[in-house]
Length: 351
Image (tube, rainbow, N blue to C red; front, side, top):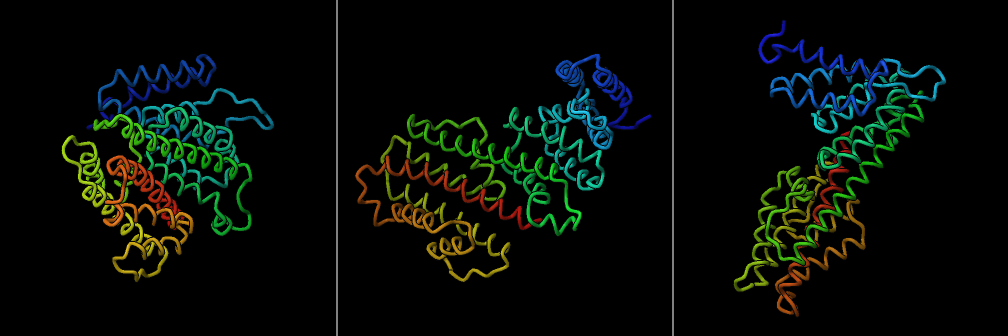
C-alpha cells in the first residue's frame, strides 16, 4: 500500500503495464498504444496524472538497460521504450525526463545493450519528438540539452572517457540530436524576426501568444526589466500621440547598454579575465569581439546600429518613426542572437 499522494498507485501502474504489454506482445501497434495511454491519462485526476508519469519515468530507466534487438537483427521489434519517450515528449515532464536519460546514459555507457538502445531507439525518438512537438522545447531547455551533448561530441570527451573513447555510433547519434537542436533554434529565431516584422507591418500592439524567444532568453539571464523597457519603447513607437524620436531611440539604446553590460559581466566570469573598459559601450563591444563572441564585421554592424540611435543621428532621420520601428525590430533579433551565443559559451564552460 502507498500512503498520501501515491495512494491508489497500484491501480494506475497496473493499467499502464497492461497497455504496454499489449504493445510488447504485438497485439497493439504504437499509435494505438499511445492513444490508449492518452485516454488513461485524460481520465485521471491531478494525483493520478502525477502517478502516471512517475511510473512511466521508472519504466523508461528500466527499459534503457533491457535488450531489445536480437544479435545482427536489423528489424526493430515492438518497443515500449520509444512509446514512453514519445508520450513524455508530447505531454509529459520532458524537462525532467530528458536530463534523466542523459544522466543514465553516462552511468550505463559501458553497456553495449544501452548504447545500442540509445543509437537505435532513444536518439531517433528524441529527434522526431523535437520535430513534432517543437513548442515544448524552450530555448533555455535546449541549452541544457546542449550541455549534456557536449560531453559526447566535444574534443573534451576523449579526456572524460579515456583511451577507450566512445562508440562512433553513439557519438554520431548525439550529433544528430545537436543538429535537430540547431534546427529548432533556427526556426525559433526566424519566428522571432517574423513576429517582429509582422508588428511593423500591422502596427499591432497585441501580445503574441506564440513562444517568444527573446522573452525566454532574457528570463534565463534574469533580465526581464529589459523586456519591460523594450515593451515601453514599442508602445511609444505605435502610440497615436506625438512621437518623440529621441525618447524612442534612448529607450532602445539603454536596452542595448544593459544587454552588453550583462554579457560582458558573464563573459569575464566565464573566461576568467577582467573587463577594464568602464561604462563605455564601445569598450564593451570590443571586449565581446576579443573574447570571440562577435566577429569584426559584426562589431562594425552593431556599432552602426548604436550610432544610428544616438542623439546626434536621430534628428537627421528622414522617417524617424519608421526607422525607429525598424531599429526596434533589428535590436530585438540582435539580443536573441547574442544571448544565445552566450548561453552556448556557458554550456561549453560548464562541461
